[in-house]
Length: 187
Image (tube, rainbow, N blue to C red; front, side, top):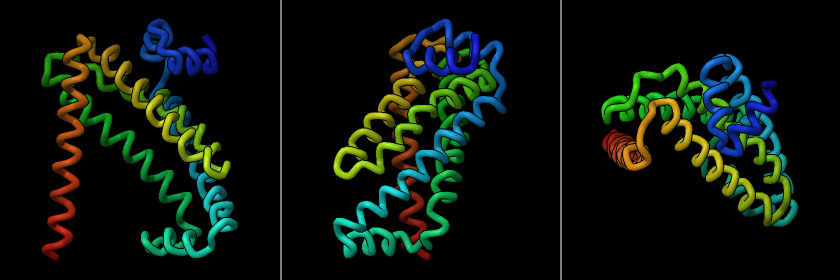
């Protein structure tokens, strides 16, 4: 099975493609797919900000100054964010899956989730005024569906345990966010 067939099968949630990716795929290959998809998305998202500015320069200025990040660093920061998210989220989901009785298969899970980052390529749509952001949001939901199926497949979990893993992970994410905000306020 070629890499494009593997990616297509994963995006269509075909079990044989998931098993093929776990057996024959490499983490480096999965990381490359994730990095390329995120880089393309980040670049076109940045260009989309430019089109956004043509409609309303004041709103673009406000959006760029809120984050206090110079424009030239926007694309690299988004790439680092999504790759970091892939690694940290994989470890959280993997740890919870193993805790809830899943097989110990972090390596296979990392491979599958790298492929599951491919829908980020639809960030190219962010260049389209008004429609781009909703299209990208749907792509993120598609990526989440691929992640959930990857969890079920890699750790050999039942559907209800897979859902429980993600509910617990989101609770951890929310509590972690509140903790970070509280620490920032105290300093």
